[in-house]
Image: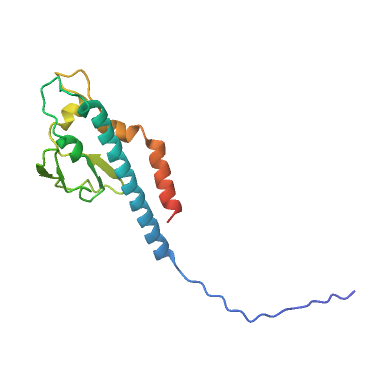
Amino acid sequence: MSTEVNRISLDMQISIEDNSEEILAALENAIERGLEAIGMTAEGYAKETLTNTVYTRTTDPEGYKLTGRLRNSITFALAGKKADAETYADDEGNTYQNEGTAPNDGDGVYIGTNVVYAAGIETGTRRKAGGVHFLQKAVSEHGEEYKQIMKDSLENA
């Protein structure tokens, strides 16, 4: 019994190109874009909660003047970077600065405000029964949406 072997010879050259640096850069850009989108979305939710619970009052029971400063001061910052909004104005046209940077603890996004009295509105004061929790709600109530934002950003890298 004889076995016949047919060989086909192709003169091909194979080259392999290392694109890992470009892929890593695209991944880092996608993560940053995703975090920025999450920050903008969280900022919007915080402002919406604050507006719906505080700024819709015709009179403040505590006698505070509602100028829009707190609402307009809310911004986000990526880890190790300056706030997205470096300046802001209240509804009366007074301007303020957001100074400083977010902690540089890896990849992450921070949402907050530099207005001193924000803590009293967020968590409540002795004169008020409870806080509005506008920052806490912006972070904790939209986790699935934030995951989807990051997933979409990574898929579109």
